[in-house]
Image 1: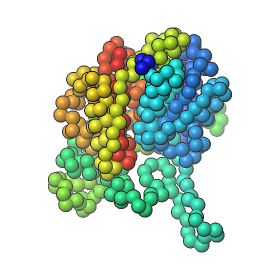
Image 2: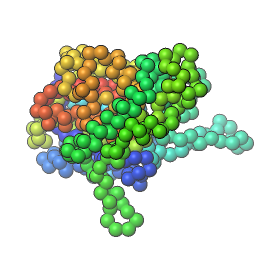
Image 3: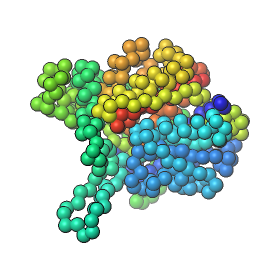
Image 4: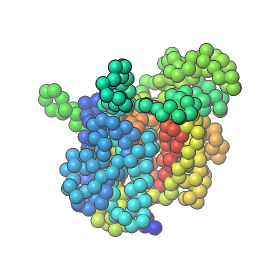
Length: 413
């Protein structure tokens, strides 16, 4: 197998829902990251890019079914450069990176771009077609922003509960309190704010020119959801978003007063953003003429009951470490997507040998945001840049996905 290197990794700043990137189409967001990769690698001949893989969790609107190919064309790459869109829900961006790495490892390609994109703001409503002509009943519109839609009636209803209720189940299972979740969320904001202040995201950011009604475009240059002023007092005022104290489970180990713990403050927000990575084999690295950030070492994938989806990274990480012949003691950084604080804390409870001090050192999705299809690629890029700054080490990127899957990638330098 050919060694696979991450030569560069960029991402847009992450916009809040209906925020600074609300007017930017998802295909334009993706194209911006591809253009930035090319601009930063002057020796790279765009015609030498053999494929482009992009993750996208929605695909129902302006992504136009295959957003990877759309982004290739919008970025100005030669029409000879292909593009494929992949979907593993929240892990779609990491899935794209892994598929690109596999293509290089087996010799199918030498230079590949991989990443992901999501505009949750611009996700459309969809109207299912009726199964008969001229229907007389009312029709329902479904939001495609997040979560289940048009669920098959044969699906086990326990599997299609809201994502936040799944987080509550994890909190029940591991007796995770509201206070623990709020404290974790606060630390995420504090770490992200410190990273911004120290310029630790600068190497990976690709600012987005946002057209204005009049005058020059506004340059969207910083993650929009980080709250340097976050506090436990402010978080404590937020009401549970999925359960109230009266909505109980008989098997919950928590007192009734503590039930209903997942809030807007200790969960990731809805977001817009894109990320892209440049991957290559040894010959590709020579052609690009840059020192790689990191090398792909191993991957892991797993699946569990959908109603406990947030715990799926546990086994994915275990499998990836085993393939890499590494243990938790060998890791210098682990980036675990913060869909919910309860979900992350649940994973930590099932990794007794893991040192939480190396978890998400620059903050996570609760602070930075979670643009579904882009998040996995963002995590991989963030790990690669951290290893590059360290000069050596081992890192991991991992995510859970709705419907009960986990995905993990080990990088080394």
